[in-house]
Image 1 (tube, helix red, strand yellow):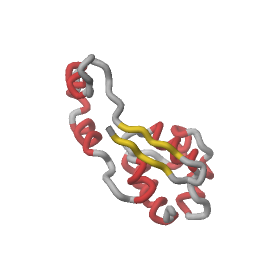
Image 2 (cartoon, rainbow, N blue to C red):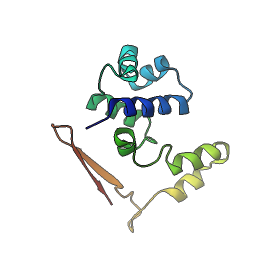
Image 3 (cartoon, helix red, strand yellow):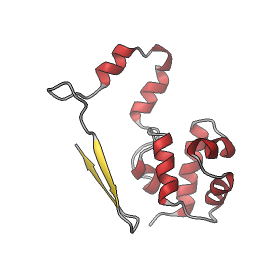
Image 4 (tube, one colour):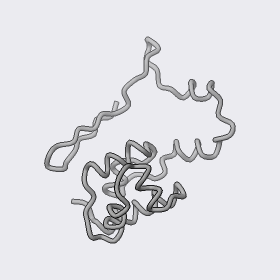
Length: 124
């Protein structure tokens, strides 16, 4: 079960990290401003759709960290990317891609969400 108060703190941490206001954050993830306000105040619990919108807009946010506070935010990849944002070249990006023997991208992880709110995370 998600602790609403702790989730609200982590959500505020994400908003602050990206330098967003609650209003601009809500626009970017495609929800009403009141949804953010109600979750931050503890009035409402976040829906699965709400969480998925955050993850799809900000892929640096880890699901397990957002829901349970375990893991890291920002991810170590985000920190290195933020630090070297101005010096990234296409060759750097290509070197970081995980390719299999055939030169194709590999699946890193698959997350399956169940209707009861639980999920399974499969990592390669």
